[in-house]
Picture (cartoon, rainbow, N blue to C red):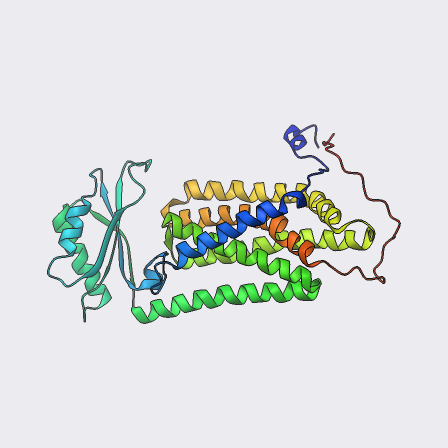
Length: 337
C-alpha cells in the first residue's frame, strides 16, 4: 500500500520525542492562555455574555440579513434609518462576507431590540420597509430571526447546562475507567480546551450562538477521545514497565500513539477546512472553532493531561499484569517502508 501512497512515508512508525522535557514551559504557556481567555470572555462582566459577541439566540431581539447586490451596503444610512422614531434600541449594522464574496454581491447583518410593545414579526416588517426606503428597492432580505427575552434566557441557560453536563459525564467516565490521577488530568485538559475555545470567540468577536455551543460540545468529545487513547496506552505501559521512570513511560506512551493522533487530526482538519471555506457565513464560526479545538485538544492530551499524572504520580499495583523485568521498546525515527 505504501508504494501506491508515497506521502504516508512522511509519518514515521515510531518517534522518540521528549515531550515531558518541555512540560513546564508548555504548562506556563497554557496557564497564560487560559487566564487571558477567561479575562477576554468575562470582561466586561455584564450579562448575559460578558466579552462574547452573543447572537440573537442568547440576547434576544431581531436579526435581519440583507443582500444589496452589486451595490455596497451604506451602513451609516441603514443605521440612521433604523435609529429613527420607531423606538428601536441597540441597533447594530455590520458587513459580512464582502467584498471577498466570489459572487461579488454585498451583504450586511442588522440586529436590534424591537420597540416596546411591538410584536417580533411586526418589527421585522417595519425594519424591512425602513431599510428598503434607505437603501433602495434592490435590497433583498435573506434571513429573519426573532427571539424574545424569555426564550433567549432559556437558551443561554440550556447551553451552559449542556456544557456542564457534558464535562461532568466525561469526568465520570474517566474516573471509573482509570485511576483518579487520570481523571484529574482529563478534567484539566477539558477545561483547558473549552476555555481556549471561548477565548477564541471573545478575541475574534465571532458571533456566539447555539451553533457555537454545538462546536464546543464537539470539541469536548474530540479532546476526550484523544486523551483516552493516550491514557489507555499509558496504563498498559505502566503495567508492562514497572521499573521504568514515570516520565519515560509517559514519553513512550505519547510517542506510540502520536502517529494515530496526527493522522486522525489531519483528516478532521481537512474536512473542516473545506467546510470553513465553502460552508458559508453560517458554518464559518462553527468550522473555525472546531479546527481550533482539535489542534488544542491534541495539544492538551500531550501537555496538559499527561503531565498532571507526572505531577501527582500514579500507583503501580503489584497485582497488575506484566513483566517487571521487561525491557522498554527501543524507539527511533524509523519511517514506513
